[in-house]
Image (tube, rainbow, N blue to C red; front, side, top):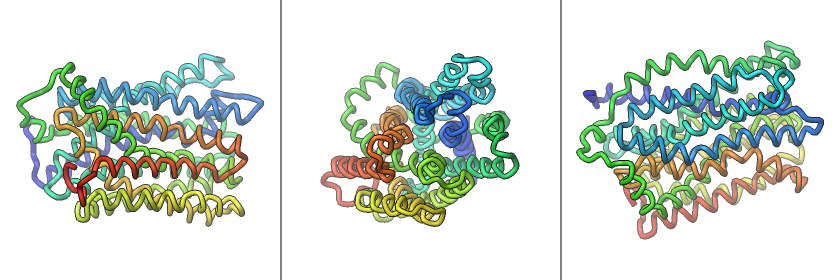
Length: 426
């Protein structure tokens, strides 16, 4: 396919690739955002803790499939092309979403219900394993010189649109329906909406143009060559996973886990928790491209170091302040600060990760590093619920972000050792 890399062409391709990323991430996040209702529908129990743990374990199961998807689909994208690979990931995600949307509850079909939901999550995880990598690499390859951080930041920014849309839809549902109806069937509406959007996104993404950089590449590595290269570069992939951990842990804590944290831990209303989630999404959407552009000017390393240190110093004390006398305003303040930390770090991190990976395995390397990190980050709701249950400290989820920030700092120092600024390839 002929490529158009004029300013207008780039803008159209950014919109095409991020629209698909929006839908994939919207479908993937819904399960966590509506965990309260999913737990009672598919994992009912007389013990609310057991029910929520089963739900979050199923949510986390999707992340266990992501490394497999990263390797298999990532190798496919690096060999066949960005455009064709991103259409395949969309199709797989659609299958998982449709399955979850239409499966009857446990009361209707018994144990088959949670099994089918688990299969749906595994399909979603397999697809998501390469989606972020494929989109990020594509954006990095069409970026204009000196603006890679800004371009790549729109991968994460499109995720925020998904969070905003899902939380806003949930807010509307809670306003329109009585709680009993929301718990019985209203929570499925966002999944049905996702199913209806799928055909539109297929049309949009099918017109996506291949990146000029990939199209001009003479050598297309065979699968065996790709796997050998990944093994050879495994230290870089593992360091990249440590770099991503700060992003995934903080992101899932301030978005997917927020509705559950607000209602179950702070005893705030679902409406207040969803409003906070929308505000966090808006904050992320603003700061991500701003900080991505700033990283193009001052270097990736400066932002990565600054915001990992700030995260380690402030996260737990702020959560401790919140839980002493929780209310909507304090929760909003804390979550917006955590949003600023996450987006400022991530604005530099995603571009940095595309730069450290070898060109011929850029997609699979990026996706594998990201997927390894999300196995931990995506388990934040499960980990946070467990920490609070066993420590009786409602601020204990702050330890997760602090630990992830420490990993990010160590990875930054390893990947950028001897480099003063960290612009471009370290």
